[in-house]
Image 1 (cartoon, rainbow, N blue to C red):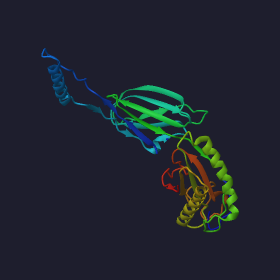
Image 2 (image 1 turned 135 degrees about the horizontal axis):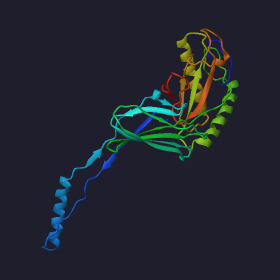
Image 3 (image 1 turned 180 degrees about the vertical axis):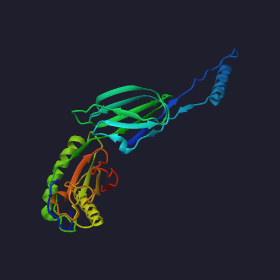
Image 4 (image 1 turned 30 degrees about the horizontal axis):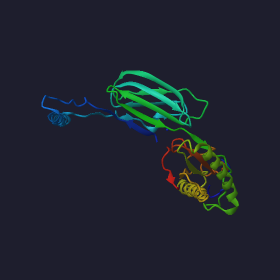
Length: 287
């Protein structure tokens, strides 16, 4: 994807905090010997006075301190901290259909506020749909975060663009049509199990200026995403250009390398990090 283009194939961390609501003692009525009407009035007045005197206590959840770099899905571990003394932590792994695959709870022995909490889990042979980690503080309030590591890369033959252009030529359409069939199949397999979206990433080689390559990759990724949208895609689709930041083959500057002029089509439950170090943000929604 350059001035000298040639063909080539290829859990945000959302943090949810759970609040625990505690209610105080129920109202108590009173009675005397002046008959049903007087008793009813007394109970009603007593209920109102007690309701006014009651105080509803809300236990707020602890603050969760978690950064994306603290999550290491490849090595099955994550570390974080909470703002209060930590009592225990629970990790649960769930499959694509929400079935429980693994669960382990352990005590944290009144760990001081802000202290690092390390959580690990065993590697699984089946696809993990969601990882949930819940931590309780000394008031039995909890904080939970969820990660959806589900990701499927769609194999395809890369589109060949003309030099410094991003229009998809008619002769290249069959490549996208073939990929579209695989994307549809993947969504039929997983789309009803997870809230997945399609992410289209574009990459270039190192010929030309980095700024120009960045712009070129962005336009080409969007062109491919727009093509899939026009095919009738009914689920979210995003595009992002990476320019020459993430080379498939390391080369010096201004090296014409076909393998680096490529794209990626990824079906994922959360924005994927397609280029190590580039983060998982910066995606533009096309549909």
